[in-house]
Each structure stands twice: as C-alpha cells, then as structure tokens.
Length: 565
Image (tube, rainbow, N blue to C red; front, side):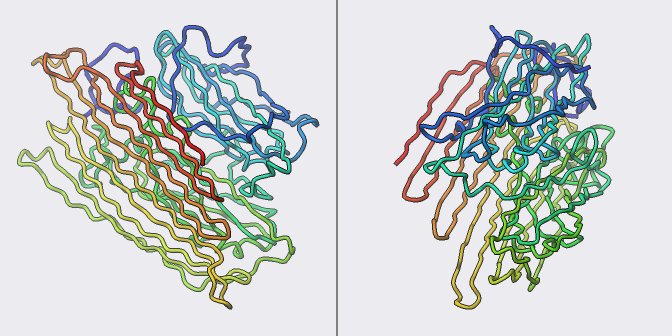
C-alpha cells in the first residue's frame, strides 16, 4: 500500500511495506531560539495588538522538556495573574515556543486553562541539526477563564529512545494589553466561558471509531443569555489521519492500510439530545504526512494552530438557560474503525443586562441525515479501482428567542474522488468541500432584520501520490507527491456595523521521497504558499498578504505586503 506517512525527516529511505501510522521534566532554557537551529513557520498574518499600547504584564509558565511524555502532560497548578496586571484587557496573546533536534515524528500539542482548550497544533518534524518555531495566538476571547484559572495543562505526547532522539523543549507564556478608552475590551469577549471537557489526564474525549459521541455535562449556565456560541476543537488521527483517501466499507482492507467509512465526515453538536449545529472539517495535513520534506521550513495550512469551529447556538439558547444541568454532545460522523478523534469545546455566553431568563421555542428544525452516494469503478484486474463520492445537503431551522426570530440556512456541496492504481500503491484524486451558512435575526413585529451573517467556506484539495519500484528485487524505489490545497473563508455581516472578512490560503507543492532518482524524474521538494486576508469594517480596509516559496528546504522567495486605509 502507498506510504502516506514515511519515516521522519533525516531517516534513511526504506522501501515501504504499508501505511504507517505510526519522562518529561521542567527545563531551564537560557536562550531562544537555540543557536544554529533552523526556523520553521506557518504562513499567516501576525497577531493584531493595540497600536501604541504597551503590555501591562506577561506571565510565563517556564520551559518543559517533552521526552517520554505519553500520558504525562505538563501541569501547572498554581497559575495566577499578578495583581498589577489588572482585570480588563484589550488583547491577550498566547505564545508557544518549541525547539527539537535529532530524529522524531510530528506530535500533537494542546493548551488548556481550567479545562478550556485554547490552542491545538502539530509539532514540526526536526532535522538532525535542530529546528525551532513560535506560535502566537490571540486568546482575548478566553479572558473570563484565564483571569480566574489556576490549572494550566500542556499536552505533548512524545517518545524518546535510541532511535527517536528528539526532545521537544517547549515554553508557554501570555502577554496582556490593558483595556483603555481608546482600546476597550473587544465585544468578542464573552461574559462567561464554560469549558466542555472530561476530567482526567487530558481534558479531551477520544472518539475511537466505534461510532460513539462525546457527552459533556455542564452546570452553572446563566439564565439570562443574550448570545451563545460553542467553539469545537477536533483533530483526526490513526486510521482517519488520511480520511480523504478512505474508501467505502465494501472496499476496505484495513490490514493493508486501506481504511473504510469513506471520505465524508461531519461535525455535529447537540444539547440534551436536540441537534443544534453542524459543520464540515478542514482537511488537516500534519508535518509527517505524505512527504515530511514538503513541510520544512514551511508547514501546511494551520498545522501549527489547528482551526476550531464556532457554532452560533443563540437560536437554541432557551434550551439550556434554565439554571439546570445540561448535556452537550460532540459527534463526528462515519468514524473509521481504529481511528482517533480528539474532541472538546468551550461554551461562550454573553449576558442579557436585563437579567431576565431567556425564553423561546422551536418553530421548525431540519437536520437531514443524508448519506453520501458512491460511484465505484473496478479495474479489469479486480484489484485497482476508483471511487467518486458526492453529497448535497440543505439544513434549515427557525426558532423564536425572547423578542426576535432566528432563521438559519446551511447548504453543503461535497465531492471527492480517489483513484487507486498499481496494485493500490498509487492514489490520486480530490476532496472538495463548499458550504454556506446564513444566520438571520429578525424583529417579528416590525419585520426588520436586526442582524445577518453569511459564512462561505471552500476547501478544494487535490493530491497525487505515485510510487515506483526501480528494480526487480524491490529495494530501489521512487515516490512522487503533488498537493494543491486551499482554505477560503468569507464572512459577511449585516448589522449596525456591517463588515466583510476574507481569508484565502493556497498551498501548492510537489516533492519526492526515494533511495534512487533516475534521470528525468522530479528531484526537488518545492512548496509555495499564498496567503491573503482582507477586512472591511467601520470604514477601514485592512489587507495582508504573504507569498513564500521554498525549494529543497530553503526559502527562495518571500514577499509580504499590508495596506490599511
């Protein structure tokens, strides 16, 4: 079977036999980055901080060595903000720094504050001489829990032995900017943040491919809810790491690394058994996937800072605004047997200043359980095949909440194609997601739109993995990888202060993994990234773009531009 996860960077190439899904301590680090280490980077804009405003304070958890750290997270139980930091912030920036040298696989890391997940990403695979990276994330929205948190958990499961020598030296810190009359607390900061987590070593719940969902019990939810939002953290691993090349169950050969359950996955949210949201995940590629050399020094889209998924659940707020205990459920559909999906969430609540309990009713709700359609074509040899998967879905619901009506419409167009050839050693195809979500709040008495938001996402993904044995003995081989993957998001808001936000990110790369490269074969590893963002609000037009190219692990072109009107 094709090797979508080769050995780590720096390993000697060895012909694959199938798909491989393959004690921490506090540390004193005197300088960062380490001398002689190479920087890796995620192409994205810098975090925005208040102009002309200095930080009021910063808090560091220190440094930690993640060596043999499976099931042994870095736990700080005495976290607190110094009194001089104050209590109101215009911005809070979370910074994670890490370095590693030697031989090591990519690993997933997470940061939680009293059970509320704030960051999840993937480490970069090192070279023997060492690499380093830094992620800065705006976590201002987490202010309600960061201000009172006492326990911070940083997870990074790693293995360290005579073969996998890499130890991840990692720090986590927070920088706080005060709120002023010119730079007030942003309206995106909720009044209350309730983590939906599982008590234990790690706050997430693991969905193991058996089809079960994750249930989280929440209490202490305020009754006077003006707005509510659920932020869903999720990542796919093991037999679903490359779910976009999975096949229908009738074609699955799990012992050979060909996994079932198909290519379509859906994220679902419920409260007390009532479905209240649905979304479709971006196709993550970790830094050990396909060809690790493609992701050094430029990593794939969002791999150092995975996207989370925000559900506006205000239309259903009356279902849990009664002061009682409620069960929130996170589900991933069509989990593959033997897969691992790590899920948890945060419930954000903005309070109604009147103090009145939120009331409402469901007028109409339709979450159809539409199943994908498979078009399977078998080759004459009875081994190779192609599968085209399609699905279109329309979701609608209407509720009445307090003195307004809420209308939500969602549409999905999904299509994927996988073509397995050469006795299932090669695969090429695509995995495309297009979805639109429209949320409208209307005054039923005056028939006036109070606010409306339309979110459109487009995730086109094209891939080609071609493997060739170059001798009869099966000892010499050549593998070509080509990837063209984009993440496009547009949010249009119509309200008292209309706004438009756009993000367009495209990764185009091609490379090889081999122990012999004949003349005429592609013999470079090339990765080009184009990132563009645009925001128009309050008469201000803010744009940012980066165009970066790396060839054979060296950045050959780097362009950055930003405009503010």
